[in-house]
Image (cartoon, rainbow, N blue to C red; front, side, top):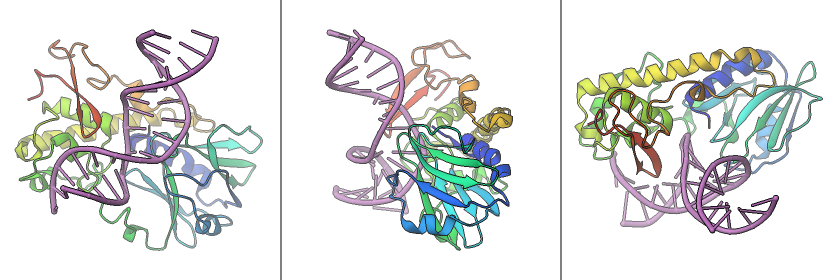
Length: 271
DNA sequence: ATCGCCTCCTGCGCGC
DNA sequence: TGCGCGCAGGAGGCGA
């Protein structure tokens, strides 16, 4: 379940194996991902060289001579670098053949991921042209959250998980950052103060950056990577801790469903 | 415009 | 040991 830190770690991990390298073949073993992989993907990717890999939200954007293609890891996807001889795994849906007998393989048991040819104006694509700000770039500004949330009645948790507002905050980090900020996930977004948004964005940045650091520590093993994502290496303060004592005040952590998603909070620390 | 629900899919853990 | 069930979750799409 890649969150933004895992996507960024993936980008950094695969980059040395792809930048400036030619993808001489693309084999699609199962085109039924979130959207069916159409012929333009293979046509425009096979035989091209990768110039750059960018990340926007949880999308990976690969640039070649003709334009850009996009990949999303969905819930269960991964990209890993292997030797060509290495055996295929169940759910290896796409294999990119690289120089020096290497492969990049896209594996995705749940097939919520996608692979899409975008052409030469990637940011005009409907998946990308309505996205909110990147929490880890200079553009990140709590004032945007404050202004856009006025008169909003949805929960603050749904609000920060809305990609049209701010990108890359998945369920785990939404729970964790709200706990660190003392804000109950059910509170109406419009009732969160300017001061609280400053604190909240700061905490979102902290948990994301911390997790990228942990992910980065496994980068050396990225070939044949099977490392646990960063958020399993760190201590989660509320996520998955139903009925366990709050680390701050010992109150039992509560769980509730918000927007079809499991939400955890300390009823004493978070108001 | 905004909100909340539905959906895609497989693996896992649980209860019996 | 095995079966069936429910749950997990990113995010687009849709109806209200």
